[in-house]
Image (cartoon, rainbow, N blue to C red; front, side):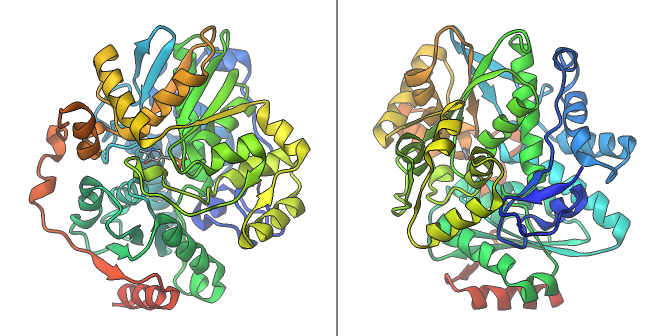
Amino acid sequence: MKYISTRGKAPVLNFEEAMLTGLARDGGLYLPEIIPTLSADDIRALNGVSYEEAAFRIMRPYIGDTFTDDEFREIIAKSYAGFGHDSRAPLKELAPSHFLLELFHGPTLAFKDFAMQLIGQLFQAALKRSGERVTIVGATSGDTGSAAIEAFKGLDAVDVFILFPHGRVSEVQRRQMTTPSEANVHALSLTGHFDDCQARVKDMFNDFEFRDGVRLAGVNSINWARVLAQVVYYFTSAVSLGAPDRKVSFTVPTGNFGDIFAGYIARRMGLPIDKLVVATNQNDILHRCLTTGEYRPDGVIPSISPSMDIQVSSNFERALFYAYGQDGGAIAQLMDELKDGGFTVSQGARQALSELFLSGNCSEEETRATIKSTLERSVELICPHSAVGVKVANDLRDPAVPMVTLATAHPAKFPDAVEQATGIRPGLPPRMADLFDKDERVTRVENDLSEIQTLIRERITS
Ligand SMILES: *Cc1c(COP(=O)(O)O)cnc(C)c1O
């Protein structure tokens, strides 16, 4: 399996290289040259197998010869062993024909664990074999960082630096990043927004001298291996609802477009997905783009669903690449226009996107009202991100097609918002009850590339 860049000018890589690299050297994102498909029989045969076995069958074609079957099975087994639910991604019925896919039973209580735990094990296995060391640098609006730190803490061949926006992540998120005591963990609190954190990480990847000097590796949601890990639960949930013999739709609380893009890949692999619904909070650039064709960032407004407070949605580039018929030159040009304020999606590409994607947004008031009404109607306490999904799913779903809304985080990760909406303060699961007693370790940094680069160089050589 070969991997190509969305901007058409970076070297073609194998799975291991694409995984370790993250961002392509032309600024683009890696995608498989060909998307493998599963037959209807292959999909039907996923019914009743364990999550791990399904993960193996779905991801195997993408791995090439990077790992043997036995190695890959072991990697998958280790990745999901720490989850607090046997089925890993259980499905709950919210209302007739509307289901909640609970993706928050991993070690940091958000769906990011599905991909990050796998990436941790993949990196560990690959670096052990090569004897190399890497420096992982990531930006987070809260959940990616905690999931990355949890997955990489204590690993020998890795230093992990996470940039998060100061004062804009929840206390549980922050503590999950600042309380691990392992020396290879570095939590950096940056003065600015998530988009600033993400921009500095991109700058570091585009500074080749720095990138090669510290052997930079990326685990943000642009990393192909993360998208791949997320493809699995689209299959397992759809199969349990009758796929491939019945169509299923999904609503996905969306920020960086990584999770929903995994749904796009699942569909290209043969899963009969009817609609993929993009659910945004008040930071609704994706909803505006899908309805008007105009992609113009206009500043982040902090919300109670902070993991979706994003205006530059990195993985959308991958969807655009396919919508533009895999024309890397066209994508490179759009991304140049984005630097000058934004771009307009062509008529043909809009048409291609609208065949599969629907979109909607959800205000702060509607988010709180949905947390409350979901508790009253279905006895489910949901986090604000999941509530954005439930609200938009209710607006747009076709009653004839089962709808699966992704519950992306545990309510206890956002207790203030949930308490404000319902009067109930959700408690952490017992296995992490000591989070508030541990000491925090964090470094404040300005939104300044060279300051951050100097700090990273110093930390990894000491
Ligand atoms: C990251 C995150 C999202 C957004 O996912 P993307 O892949 O960035 O679109 C939604 N909800 C929660 C809880 C998250 O952590």
